[in-house]
Structures are given as C-alpha cells and as structure tokens.
Image (cartoon, rainbow, N blue to C red; front, side):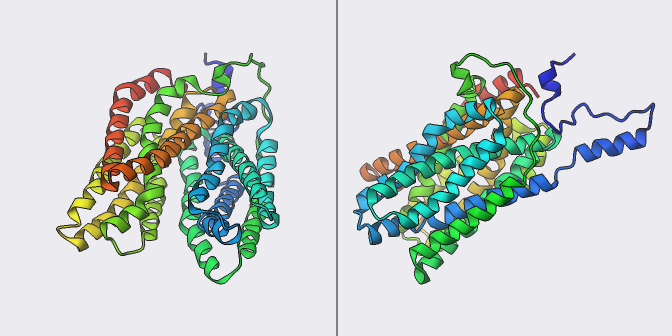
Length: 430
C-alpha cells in the first residue's frame, strides 16, 4: 500500500487510473483519458501568462544599458553591476520561495509576485534618480525570482502527472518564444520610440499576463503537518548532486549568453551575433516539442545524458572557431551558427528532464522546494559564468574561455553518469 501523499501526487494524477472492467470499462477508459487531458483552459491561461511575463522581461532587457547611459549618464563599467542586481536579488530569494510555496497557498503568492513584477515597470518610468532605479531593479529581481518558481510549481499542480514532462516542456517553450521576439522588438522600438513607450509596452504585456494568471484555477492545497524549520525546507537535499551537475553545466551557458557577441567580433564573424541567439532559441523550441513526451515515458536520465553529450561537443567546437576562422571564414561562420542551433537542442532537451528529475525526488508537499533548488542551481551557475568568463577572457582569450567551459561540461557529464543518475533511480518517488 502506497503512502497517501504518493497516491495523491497531484490534483490530476492518473498513474493509478485503470478501467473498471466490472462496472463499465468504456466509461472508465473515457474518464481516464479526460483526467490525462493536458490542454485545459487553466493550462492555456498559464502558458499565456508565462509568455507575456517573459516578453515584458525580454522587451526591456537589451535597452536597459542604453537607458542607463543615455538618461542617467552611467559609466559603462557600472552598467553591468547595476543590472546584475536583478539577478542577485532573484538568486537570493529563490531558496525561500520553495519554503513559502510549500507552506502557504501557491496561487496567491504567484499573483502577488506577478503584480509586483508588472508594477515595477511604472517605477522605471517614474524613477528620476539612479538610486531609486537601482532599488526598483532589486525589487524587480525579487519578484521575478518568486513568480518564476511559483509558475513552474503551479504548472505541475494543474497538469496530470502522466504528462508532466510534456507540460513543463511547452511551458518552457513560452520562455523561448519570448526570448526570440522580445529583444528584437525592444531594439527595434529603441530606434523609433522613447524609453517611456517601451516601458509602457512591457507594462501592458505584464498586465494582460496578470489577468491570464488570475484566470488559472488551481487545486485546493491539502493541509500537511507543519515540520520544524530545517535546511531541507529551503533546499531539496536529495537534489544536491543533480544541482551540482546542473551548476557546472550552466557556467558555460552564462558565458555564452554574455560574451558570445564579443567572441564573434573578436574572431571576425561579421554577421549579427543576434542571429546566434535566434538559432539557439529555435533549437530550444524544436527540442522542447519532443523532449517532454520522452520524459513522460520515463527516459529522464537518458535525455539528460544525450543533451550533455551534444552540449559538450558544441562547446569544444565553439572554442575551436577561433582557430578554424583562419582557415576558412565562410565555413567557420556557418559552423558558428550551427553550434548555436545544436546548443539550443541540447539545452532544450535537458531543461524539462532536469526539472522533472528534481520534482520526482521530492514529495508532493515539497514541489516548491524542488523547483526552487532546480532554478537556484541554474542561476548560480549563470552568475559564476558571468563573472568567471569576464576574468578568463581578460587574462587569456575568449576561445580559451569557451575551452574551459567545454571542460566543465565534461565534468558535469561524468558527475551525472557516475553519481546523479544512480542516485536518482535509487531515491525517486515517482
């Protein structure tokens, strides 16, 4: 007999849904299919809310450096420090998000964080002093850290466990779509419109997203015994090995998102480096369409391994572009953007699998903690990549920086194969 909390894994759990051959097998089969239904109004609403949230985020992301230098006359060295306050704030709050989401009702916390996130765009428009802008930036990061953890957790709550990987995959696809269109639209608007207009568009996007979020119906949170405050209320201890592997993987990812444009310029690739991120987003979008279904078939560790192998190869090739460019400019340019596409496929394959891995290691009343640990590991690695990548490039070169990142992906793959995968199969609850 399974424990009650495992049977009630989610509001729409269908693992134990079997046709009743005695009463009415056809009716029972139909009921099972209905419970397994993924595309529901609530799921569509939260997909829309997630897309609009990230669209508002990515719309202003590429124009904020211009805003700081043109409006506040900030020195270029201080721009990165000011903008990084957002990431640091999000990283600091993530461990506490899981505790709050597992202790209190999740939807109210989600809506409060979403509302604050959207309201900060008004603050950006009204901030007349740099200090006030920095304060708004910190609060924005705190709200973003909470709303992203809460959104991921609610998706798991409102979708059937038998299709959880697919649900997470499509949910993450909204991020990739926003990443594909948001920066491009933001830079286009910067050429023709004022900063106030851009902030207003983000505000409108966030407001519509907030309305969509309000329409999401979530299951009533079952009361659970209050446990004493301990470390595992903030960090999923069983997820630490996986978190270490994910952190090592996200360091070169952080280097890529920040310095790949400078790398392209350094080695002489003349095409817009923005195309690199477009190719990467396309790769992520395509891979998410099939990886989620494979996760639901139980191939979590297999997907992560294949994704890691692909990412390892890509980073070694990326590091080699600095040398190959001297032999053939055209072929190296094609390879450069092909690497972006394949990196997107690799990371897009791993994201839903890693998310499901953390969730499957946690009981249903600690889903928030599991999601928080997953996102904290990823964000921490990106932060390290931002810092380490700059120092390595300063004292060596960008190709050596990406070679270092490629070595980290190898370490991550070895750690996952030898430690994380066996640990997961031993301790997984679902």
